[in-house]
Length: 364
Image 1 (cartoon, rainbow, N blue to C red):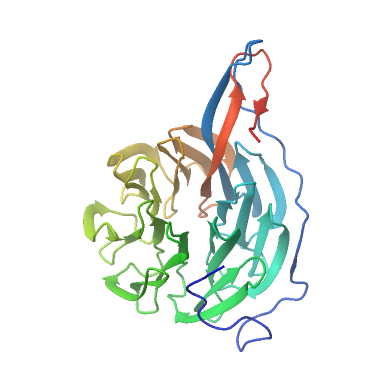
Image 2: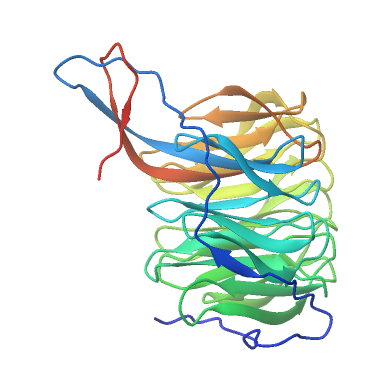
């Protein structure tokens, strides 16, 4: 299997300045989580409705990692570094979450196991995870406690690699799996400039970012990628295969946008406007969604396979909210103040549509 961006050297021994934590390793143990059933009606003929669901990972008000959505809802029993954000990706047969633990170490949990990866993160920053379907593995990118950009590849021949690129110490990177293979990473460098590294390009893009904010990158189905970011003017900008543009929308200073490709083509961006309200911009429309957000947090958006999108965000009441094609409203799950959720799409879910009982049926 080819990976075109294995820059740096595998982590085989302690590198200067990088904390290798005792007890690192993955175990195939997953804390039990309560099942969520969507209430639907269903007759004896077994009427079926198919839809594309979603799953959200977030930091609860107890600083524990929680997940909720069409797959499951529950406390995963993992302590997080306060006011950081987990990242979730669907692996096709389950989900995997990357997060900064309360020890400041990079941890992962999900279908592929739960464990301490033994890598010290810059306190207060957040990782990003993407699934490479063609390779059957996932990649996590993060800012190490040295201030450099690092990557972790799962599976045989994987491991941790120091990409040797200094970052803004308050910023977090973003990774996406490209349609043509490999990955692309977007990050804010130590000069507060947007930069990329990966199979589709490497280097500074020469665009100034708001210090301490984080870019978001999404692969495009036709190839290439698009990045959304807060410029040093606090305006929302995009750049990538679809061009570079100032979208003329003021963002809440220091917050970060989220971008996702859409099944119908193009992309959609979610952001917190400078009014503290959730906005979207892109191929599916631009405008206010009318929901007040927790000030300074960042929404997360995913394009659904059946069309449309879903957004997860921290509401001004401190609760986890969603808005989009599938659901809209307060999920009544309390978040850690100032943290932001992460959302991923799920494969097709088939549900019985006419029954006095409620029982999801997942196709095999």
